[in-house]
Image (cartoon, helix red, strand yellow):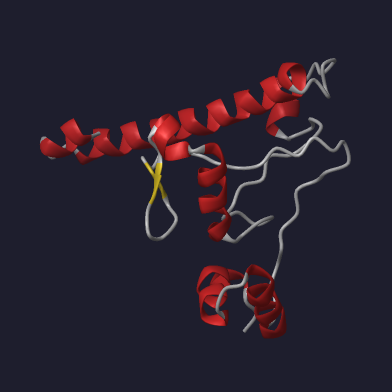
Length: 152
């Protein structure tokens, strides 16, 4: 992408970045498949069609920090520390908790056969205050990171 940007070729730069994003997501989905079938083996007999995979008919879930089921990006540093991500694969976190390079993904695997995706929805100020106390962070910091989920 950088080479195309140097040539002022925005179209190909955007296409390369979009393709890299798709590859990252596809690889994350493939790893989830390998975990289900082989590594943890809780769905070793799984035999799903492409449509079943697209509609997430498999057992278990793969939520990620910053998405509706777990909107708090502040969990990313915990993941990165436990897995020594920066040293192991060179992915870094920016100040805004974005991953660099941009075509990177992180998340959790839940093997519980009854686990389902859900969106947190809107929360109220008292919940933000309680959350801040539980995380041992300031209410201001909790408000900053949970802003999209705070009810007006």
